[in-house]
Length: 79
Length: 525
Image (cartoon, rainbow over all chains, first blue to last red; front, side, top):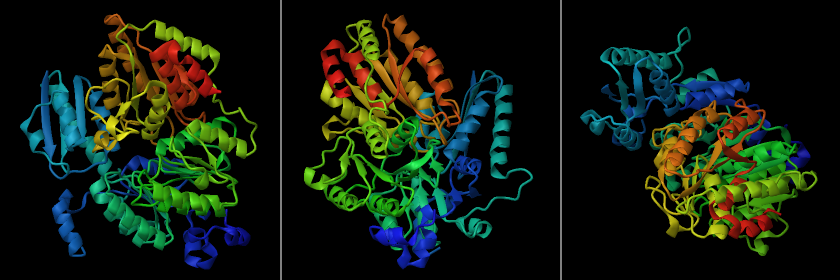
């Protein structure tokens, strides 16, 4: 499903003007095989695996022990 | 009967994992009820309604976990708490496997060429995770809700700048390269590409396209807030441009609740420039001929599916949009069985867009429809309050899902509400939606049938007949099996219609009878 050059030129602009930017061509999600990092509900990772999608699941825990005020402080400090 | 409540401070598991643990514990010998939940306000209230009274519940915060179990005897209770600990620790580290990564950065060491982050953490932490994913050059499917419009705009502007797609927040479904993200159905490959600001809207239209024998190229979810004036349709415009460039896509469908006027103008301007036919379904929102130009408007979701199929080369009328005469007769016969007090439709939806669509269908037929997600602000009601006249309640709205799994997978709250409506002498008919596919409950009919039987029995004890109407969003390729689910519901006395719009019209007919039959027939043709 790689875009042909012609269709790239005919596109509307913005995101679809992928030929102008090699990096964006690499990152056009419709033209690539999905490779996923799943953060949160673990069954979403299971469902993707069952569709033969490569997935790495993150065992996520709330940062700063879930303390929102502490989290804001850490973000301000760039941590 | 004995109960015990334990609060585990600063302990987190996702809502679906906890729902599964709760279900396992509930089935242990001697256990009468069990809940393992994050201590959100909603969950604390549900526990209190279920009879768990403990001061520790009141002191718990949303980052704490509550284990609340009721048993016939102490020995069962002890065993259940031990099993809960085992299940919680099993989920922590899969036996025999290396400990999973605990951050995006660690995950990227294992999958350095990842191109998508699927994020479903609680809303207050979601922006942080999404921002990190974008900074690493990943597209994002952001399932999390409870994210402010300001945060959404900030994330989407960064995504657009980096030429990445940010689907969400509050994005229920997407089908990218024929892989379902979040909640979605198994749909045949084909030439119809969709961009949608509504999850169940996308599910309804894609399944109807599949049932008509056609298929889809891509289905891009944008999240419900994308077409607000603040966000300005950033993701929908990106999606449109991607589909315009996509060679497999021959027809484009746009789905949303009515956008803000400025956003509508922007999105339709891009759509009008498309070289491909574009169907626009803004769910009852009127679009001026100037903005519409050559675009193809559809009022309801089934209209959008029908139009898309026709534009993709299928003969008209293949997608069912006409209610058969026999069904109209059945509905009128049901109306005759109602008691005088039974006047109102009670719609209880797990799909927010289906709730909205039903309101749009009902309003011209029946007048005012009250909802926690109303089409008119003056008809807004509290979702928790007892239903008022004709009501459509979105059980997937934020107030029902804070720290809980979505009603498509966790039927607890909707089942409670079905019984509540059955007891109300003013309820003429209960209208529900059922979603199959990835993410949804493994056996929705198995969850619903006992409750439907109980609801009908409750009404019967009070001398009333209680009709229940449903539509099932799904395909035969979904693992729950469309035919199996419809058969089980039908055998429980549920009247099954092929689309939500039709189920709504039939419900209106049951509630109001002959006086609106002519209008229904006219609208169905």
